[in-house]
Length: 427
Image 1 (tube, rainbow, N blue to C red):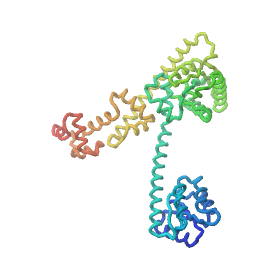
Image 2 (spheres, helix red, strand yellow):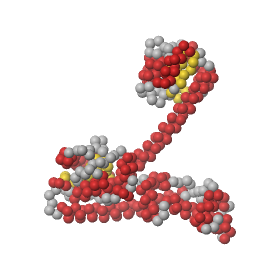
Image 3 (cartoon, rainbow, N blue to C red):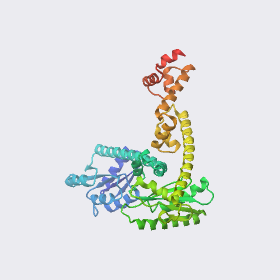
Image 4 (cartoon, rainbow, N blue to C red):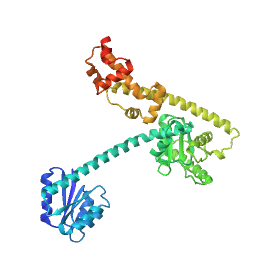
């Protein structure tokens, strides 16, 4: 139901408006009344009405002043003013500045109903738009961890061209005109549960205060990129990063009883160069808290190469394993739902990755794109049905997920070289 507020100092007029609305729009409105502007403001702030009908001329705070005050916190409220003809000039001014509609007094029943219906149409449209907006935000929010993991891997593998990283940054509300890497190495026994706890603790610690992306998905360590201002002083960044790392290590030790080492790479003024910061952070993550510039090891370059190789070998194994599981899960989902209108986006969401990433790895692994794979499966199922004597061509068309028999026939002929009817005659 919608909340509707009628503000008018004339009781008979107020009651008349209420009666028409209550009798015409049964079970549509909770109706509230105010006998002056001050009362309208108080009630309005409490019940947050969807529609306000206010008389312009009321003692004390008039209708327009009440509406101006209410609009400060009621952005989506639909305001209608009641006005006598003598105040029509005020009504026109109100429509320009504050109000959606007006009704002349004495009001006509049909005119009042017409105005309320117009208001309801607009409110319903706003409600639908908000629902669509919330659904979109919910989908984007659900995708953010996937995008974060994919962006981190694209950076550490120095392969940003493999994704539309600018779109990823936009979704994650980041710029990364400058930044540095931290590699968090768990010193105790590593399990997926331990890793997940450490990552969650890091996110709770850093994300309220810094713009950063964190991933534990692709390597045995936890990788974090912290965004900096493009004009930040390098020495200050270095000091702050070491201090931050120390605080994080202490927080994790106190909160979950786990010891970590953190390697910190240098700050770079480009996201394309952050892979260097990753290599530096990785080579400095042997024990304790180390910044690459202060990590004195005569075999630093050799160690950096060795650690990177180990990390990427582990990453490759994990990625191949995860891709295999992901693709099997996707194929199973397609197999169970091929006769429905399942989109690439739905399938990607089902397996827990972004549609862009899913499309890329699906084609690379399967050898054909998602839609071709789905189409081939549907046609194979259709052929099986024809060979087993199942129903008519039209029935088979609907059974395998097509709504248009003519389109089904064209797709079938494109793949098999003959129409469904010709194929059925052969069997």
